[in-house]
Image 1 (tube, rainbow, N blue to C red):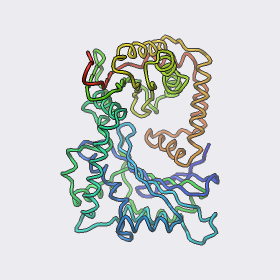
Image 2 (cartoon, rainbow, N blue to C red):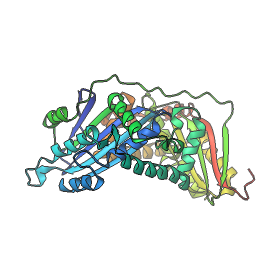
Image 3 (cartoon, helix red, strand yellow):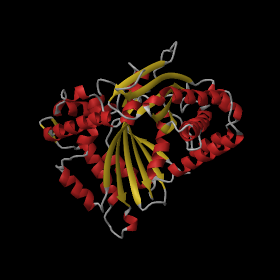
Image 4 (spheres, one colour):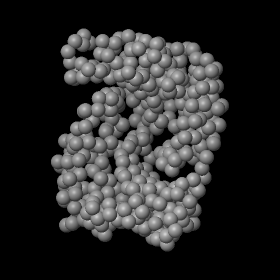
Length: 425
């Protein structure tokens, strides 16, 4: 469990999670905006450009040298989507000066560096540094192209693309290859200024620190104007008259069978906890029906699992199979889903699944980053739900709740990536 102190400062929501567990302080800044095809490639470039240089540290080498001077502080950036939101994450871990015997105010200096990255990035002639932007454009192209080489990730992306065709959730967080060459340093900087004015921005600080210790420093360093929060609606998919089947052929030896289900339930819904348990029995863990029946008993899959997209109302089944096993694997997956709908699961399976979910949540909040991710679920969902309530709700899920949630789950799309030669489908 953890305690969180939250305060809105202008256009920034400051979250402080005081804990004496760690000898480091973790700072995480999240920028959120609705997924939008027009902007997504520029948003994907921004954090990678920002992490290169600031006015005071005008090169990657200078910035990394400064991080070394902060007792080996680390800095990373990342992209994600949660529901139909595009999330930029900038993360820094810095030693807590209380444990170093130094008078150097490391947390304050880390906040200053964060502030420099946001408000004083390296610019020239009204734009970001052109050299840095061109360098990061090349790197972004490589990231997007690498999706094609990672067939599991590719199949996951293609399933979502087909299932959510035409809706924002179909977009990849890295944007579109075709848009990269249209971006220049000035255009990107102009868009970044727009982001600073309109994105929903949350700053997390986790460590042996209280809100009152850092509030003044944050007020001084993050002069963001107050803004209206934009609500992101989840697109309602048109109900299909039959399950969509997409078969794609490439030069692959192992087939990737991915199924997309509509759960009609998101993190915001009262029966989300029942969905978690349903997914856990079905395919979420090593004891689940998919793993035991598709992989272990039938030996049809290299892996077989399911997971839910909490803010989108989607459940995805993933299985790596021999191309010739397509029909048989599909048949067994359908049989496991049907068994769940018919309530063919035992009290032991329910108890074991609840225990694994509980352990998983407790392990998550054992790390600073895990605490932030749990807290940020509430930001996305605009729902305040402490972890102890979540754990309690999982324990209260009944057999009847699980059967009832199964009635809402509908198969939408089957995507199969298979070999070019020798496939009859």
